[in-house]
Length: 266
Image 1 (cartoon, rainbow, N blue to C red):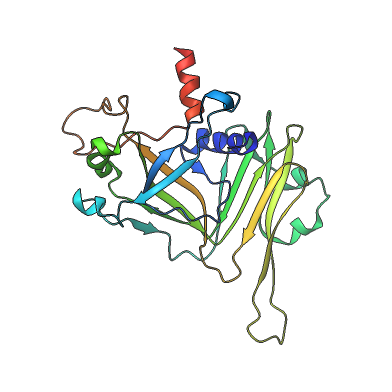
Image 2: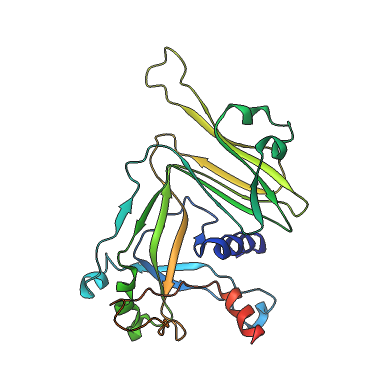
């Protein structure tokens, strides 16, 4: 995982406890299971822990879910037809859009949805998802029975996935203090048969690492955010009083570099 990708993932994980995909076009499905790469030693000693999720299978396809009586995942928000969900890092706050844009991007004035953000220090991470749904395994604690198996030791499972029809992700430049981001939608051309809305993401600054996609047919074909859970020695004891929950929630799968940070602090 390149440093710039790692920083984006790290910033949004600290804010949401979910993994942000650097390439949301790559499908991520609830029930996918595998491992998080942690890098190698030896000649590549200079490389940092990678933290990439490598899929090895899906518990609903290979029979693991049925074996452990894990419910089929449920999708929430499928009937929603509009709206943007914003996920930002902890060092980013919303601000007045006119101040963030600085009057440099007239296209923002025509956006159906827009927002301004200010970064307090370093780089900031911003994720926008239009028309998103959330698919989850309920209850998520039911995965404990599966992950407790010896064959699943060291594995993680995707317990929740955000899926959307349009997305924009931005990792701001270090010297960037504010930015405005919006979704511009132009009406279909008059008189053209089967004409569709022309939508695009616009921003007030060209700095930083930016990527956006718009599904022309409105299908939710992008997977910008997902949740990984794992079974760890630390997570097996939740600290909850017995009898309150039959299946306590599993701990989030933490990026490997954050685990190293915690161990260095001990």
